[in-house]
Image 1 (cartoon, helix red, strand yellow):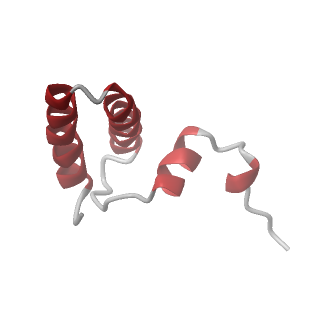
Image 2 (image 1 turned 90 degrees about the horizontal axis):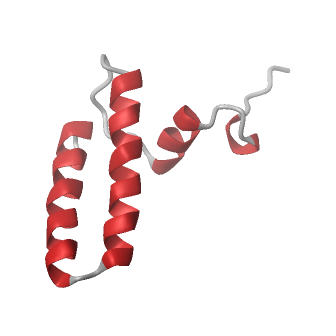
Length: 72
């Protein structure tokens, strides 16, 4: 993906396709991913790049051990 907006659109279309196929597990996974992307976009309106899953996770969970940054 080139931008977060493209990723959001892709997830929305994949959710519709998964619902039509009856794949509820995939629908739940994609809905969680979509919610994280939307929150990331809200928190960073000036940033349009497509964030990695780790960037989204750390944006939503800044105190998680995986997200802590230590200065030497």
